[in-house]
Length: 236
Picture 1: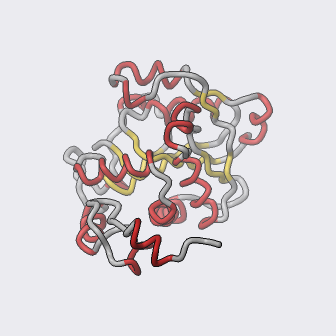
Picture 2: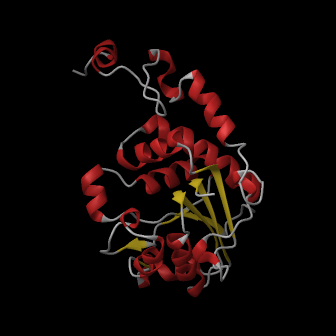
C-alpha cells in the first residue's frame, strides 16, 4: 500500500526550487514561490551587458564558437545571479520532475518559436558521464530533452555519447575545449541518423560553448545541415 499524500507532505513539505522556502502543498507543481516566479520571469528579460539583448537574442559569440560550428545560441536566462546558479545546480544534482517539466515547457516555447519544425528537425543532448549519473542518479540533459520532445513532437537523436574524461565544471576555460573534444563521440551505428538533419541541442548551461561546439562539429561532419543550441542558461 502506498504512503498517503498527507504523510509525504508532512515529512517532505514542498519547497521553492529557487529560494528553498516552504510552499503551500497545492503550489508544489509550480516549483517556485510567488516571489521567485516573478524573479524567474524578470531574469528572462535581463539584458546582456555586452550586446544589450535578452538571453534569447544575445548575439555574443561564446569563446569556442569562433569558427561558427554552432549556428545559433539561445537561452532562457543568463548564468550570473546566485539564484540562477542555485537553480542550475538543483537540476544537475536532483531528480525533480516538476522542475524538469517547468523548464522543459519554457525551452519548448523557444524550440517552437525559433526553429523550422519538420521530419528533418531533431532534438539532441550531451550525454552525461557515467560517474555523474552514478553520483546523482540522473542524466538531467536527457530528461530535459525527452520532455521537450514530448511537448514539441520532435524526435530525439541519442547518438552524442560521452566517454571517460574530466567534468567540465572542474576545468579552466582553456582546458574545456580540449577536454570536450576528447569526451564526446558519435558511434558508427548512429551516424546515418543525422544525415541532412537540423539539430536542436538541449543543454542546461553554456559557459565557453566547448561542449556545444564539439557536438556541432561531430554532427556536421556526419552530414547534419545545421546545429542550434537552446539552453536553460548561458554565461553573458
